[in-house]
Image (cartoon, rainbow, N blue to C red; front, side, top):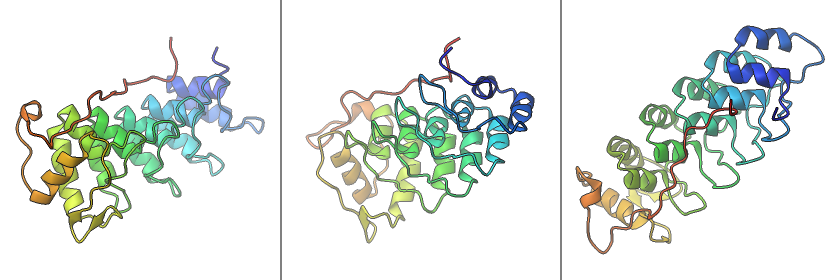
Length: 230
């Protein structure tokens, strides 16, 4: 089913012992994806939160941690961040050559953007601990991690992002002042104004009013997705 290899199936179920046995065979390619979703064993282990399996796979130098899947063009790190799998995110970030800013190829959302959209505070904290993380990269809807956090009412994430952006040297910032790009009316004006003023977020985002308050009108929060249906 789904064109899964035995290794994909074992990784999906979190059977680390079976994964190790299969990887010991010379005829097993650890990067072979399933034929329906284009997800490698590392993809399914990462999105389902099987950190032990992820570590076993990453112990192989020939495992590619940056391969996007076919359906959404998401890397294993994107999936782990979207589903709130903090331990897996940490494991992947510890692997050399894993870029924390690589977006998916469909929505253009970075791991930070996806985690902010879905309200995963622990993942946000882990990603922001990286000095090379881009905090204000817009997705294909011109939404940033901050605008998604604002629209979702994730106040703690908003504060975390504000603190990081205030000391950030991202290309979108100049001398600590936010240089707001052209907005599509999806929250960027409010985000920029809030940051420039250094004001605190209102306790209830839903009560914010005014001509310059433009939060995303239809935030499409991605549901937690498992490797395969039962």
